[in-house]
Image (cartoon, rainbow, N blue to C red):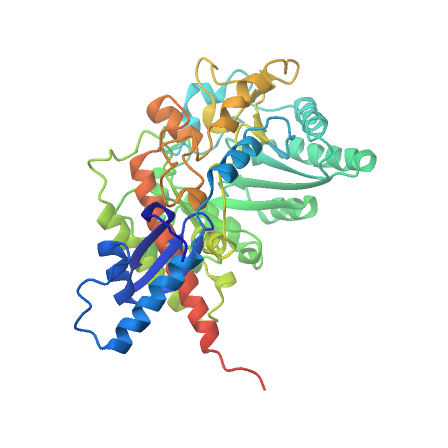
Length: 460
């Protein structure tokens, strides 16, 4: 039997189901409550089991042995080799955010982009700047053949002509480089008419709508610049797009710990959305609940309700059709044995280009004095030097190094850490608690559908 320590695995229980996670491999084991009780109380000892029949004790011993035998700690040699690989600068970019519009027709009270630093000098990106951004991406991709372009804002559809010209330019560059581009954007939906949607489909731009789950929440926090409600504008636009839910997912922000997530899903499904992702408030939104005020048990209760409801409505018992995409994504991560070392590609393989041709590690790291900017499209001299920190800030180098969730979560959001603590490596404790419970929920989800699949009658 392998000798493993408690840091090599994590045992947890959610909604009556018990699990052990092999931390290094992100491998999940479903276990009996008796095994969970023993492994959590005294790391696999068999205390207080003397009253069990011999056969039960024997089965319990075998279960514990089998689990520990399968857990694979990472040797120091392998860890050092992994660190060397992770911190190697220069593997090339694979995508950019193009900030085509630093203007928006909504005035969302929690938007991180309401800061003057985000608006900058030029409010709209020109086609010339967008094309320079594409050229920069190609030149720094180091022969990668699949590149991503994300059109960002503000509200990107306020600059649709430049988006169209940029996509056309990417197709031109594809001819001489053989690069395949994929495009995406997030829009607030107020300009997403049927004609605009058809244009985006022709351009093959994957589109997500940012809309909060209840009309009253949307209309309170996501008003127009004139202070008018916005829900009906978006709902009317979507009503004119046949079967839009087959193509467009929703992203809803959880604005408070007691937000009724089930009611939010019902409202979004009622207007036609089939896939919904729940996001959290950004650290610089001005609306964050302080750690001491955040009611995590209330928040967990709302997610438990959400889990039960969505399992009930997803009657085909197929994880791929589960309506909450962020939970579905986490379940898939666990299933595939996720091994993430960073929260995202910020500052390593993905940069943000603003309308002033500035290059930043991320749209979340635009500051009033531009101290986080790493260069411009005309001056890239110090980019490698300034981005080295993002390669070095991996889960082994941050306070997440001993956290059981590190490879599934990927560590702290650089933007959140910067605005909360002035560094890139300190995780927000509230976000950590949320992420861990979302992983628990995803494990439950994965186990649920695995059981359903095993219960299916076998074909002859």
